Length: 616
Ligand SMILES: Nc1ncnc2c1ncn2[C@@H]1O[C@H](COP(=O)(O)OP(=O)(O)OP(=O)(O)O)[C@@H](O)[C@H]1O
Image 1: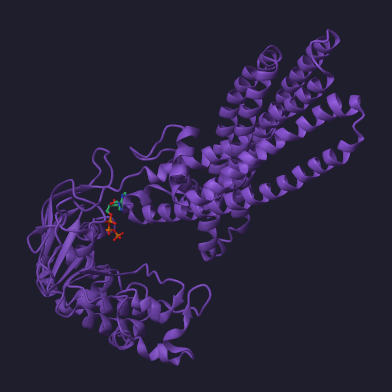
Image 2 (image 1 turned 135 degrees about the vertical axis):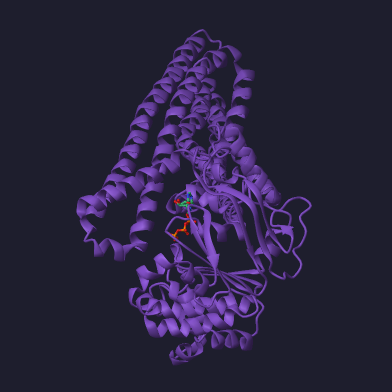
């Protein structure tokens, strides 16, 4: 048992794992250039121009003040000390302290303003990403893992926010300081400065070399983190399954494999940084050696004052600070670039199922649905067609049931009506209009789905029912619950309709959840209803209540019922038996029993006694 389950899980995970690395066509982005990342961030920050202006002004003032302090040093060494100007000392002391206080205030201002811009950009980006995810096709969710997508919206966006809040400020300050000081030093002594700047190409080259590798490692860190998040999401939501298979240790083992991959990737990043920083330090010391040796030589030759050399060394430090900071910021930038790539992979994915430019609103439907010569497959692989030249008519106000073996294409037919997927050939029409010619909103608004996988959100019972029609009044919500045979059990809860359900509230039984989902569909009041295995796995009492609720829901609507349990569809107006995407036979329950074909076979399998007596 253990082995079988392990094998299955591994196969599922291998397939899923492929989904992460191999995005569908159009989803793969080139390694994002840091430049395009900054452009996009600025684009998001544009509306914050006032705050940006304050931050920029602070940066300029910080650079100016940093420039003034070495000038005071030079003045003290070259003028005050030789001239014994005691009266100036207090002024110099006050000047340095004043500059320090002003620097503190400006740094506070720029940091807090940038942090708030960072948060706002983060807020916008995360909302854009979520909105985009909501619009992406169902097929996108078939290919990508939920935990991985969650990690992109949470972890990756947070990393980008760190870049804006803390590192970008530093980067601006550094670029500005670097340029201002380099220009000043060139003016004072261009030869010494050129010699000094000769070390910088080495720094840039080293930075680029390590940058690429660090980014690749960060990509691994983030991907492995997404794996961890995906594993958590699947095993915690499926905790009952894990326990029923006593797979706790097995899952803990698999979790530790994933965290180990994350740890290894992190260690790789640290190793690269540990190698990079000493190289940069060495180049910085080489610069210091040049200034010290060449400067001292100039002083000894009376071509330069001691104060100028001291100031030069102070400026050298200021010049090298940005580079040293940059080596640290590089970490954040590379990490952000890897996160940015992952965010862009989602944002660059275009939804395929969208409204045509000239899509019209589907008028209130009569509910006649026609499949004409439909061919459909989920993938482009050969022989993967689920439907081929498929024809079907669903008549307005009638119940059409689909039965057939597992995998015969029943759910796929429902997916094509709701346009979760588009047909490759032929057409699906509602009241004569191709579903691709009408807006998705107007189409889906007129379709209600009640399925076996009931999704109820964390919130109150009332909120869950109202999901079917947000503007419904309290009376309408209650009437829908009444019609769905749910009112009785809801009223037993002390808080009635305001009872919290889901993780932070009461647990409902399968039948109760089903009735709430029927109430939700009744409140939506759609012209077309799709029931997907709606009454599977319920006890007889629940089933009777639900059957009664469903009878009310189906009344006067076009209904597509996908059923395995033939007992639930005996009253259907039409029953179609599907095998391998083809209709094998159709008719009413009685007609099909008489025909003694596949339907009767299925029926006899489910109700051996009933057919025995029927045939006597
Ligand atoms: N999202 C998907 N991506 C790829 N293939 C899919 C997808 N959904 C279904 N299929 C494949 O399409 C075929 C038809 O599946 P479908 O779910 O329509 O069958 P079904 O008759 O509803 O089965 P069941 O009664 O077991 O629910 C199956 O071979 C299935 O493996």
